Image 1 (cartoon, one colour):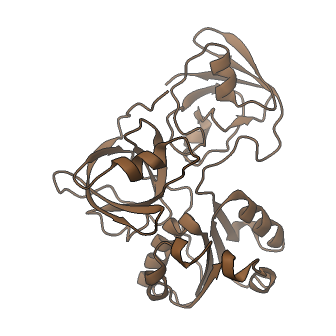
Image 2 (cartoon, one colour; image 1 turned 120 degrees about the vertical axis):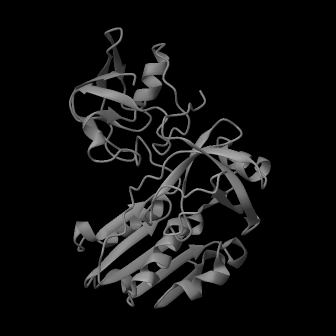
Image 3 (cartoon, one colour; image 1 turned 90 degrees about the vertical axis):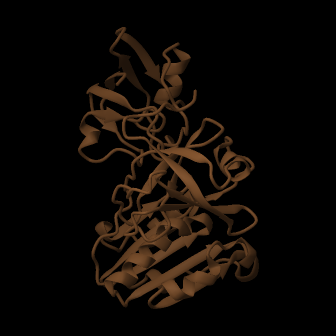
Length: 318
């Protein structure tokens, strides 16, 4: 199913477009009337309704203090569900797009020192953080930026200027595996921010077990998975009809509802766009999305990735 609009959606115009690499395209978005956009913080993302009908979430990558525009960068994924291909292939300067309000599940907290890790397109929120940290005058900022090669490195020419301290550019095709322990053995007062794929995050979590958990922050730019953690079966009751649906360990709540003939609007399937949001009437959910705020998690659930802590959830449409 395609995504529907919500009351917080906004139409913007593409006022700039440039290819950063052969696969990554940057888009500048502004309001048609030239008015200011809603405030956003470093690490925030917006959901874009692509020409294909798919909704996809993209991190803001520019100076978020400049409210005249949002800037995102999209990596064209040939094997994906079509949203990124639609953005890169079909969106031109002058086109209109519908976007959501900016949300942030990757907050940049105040700290005396930072270690930032980005892999490929994961540089997008990290770049916004570098801009903000430079504005704050934070001197102790180290960036590790991984990519396949120089040609596959978005914003390569700008990174040295943005970083206030040390930059490690690591191209896997040239340098092979990176020895992380030298970087992570002594945490000090640093906060670690990582934006990259799940295998990288798992590796760095294992290597930072001696860090304070509150100082380790991770975001998966490919979305999240319903099966990345322990997944047990549970029951979900669809309140409008009272129908009870078993959600097997190997199925998502969304998939089980749809298999039972219950239609739920959905799009990304990765807990990032917010389209499939349901009201949480009863039960305790195991929230695995990057959309809901802590306050919203008391009342809503994203069935594409989230599961249950209790044996039974009761849900209803908005």
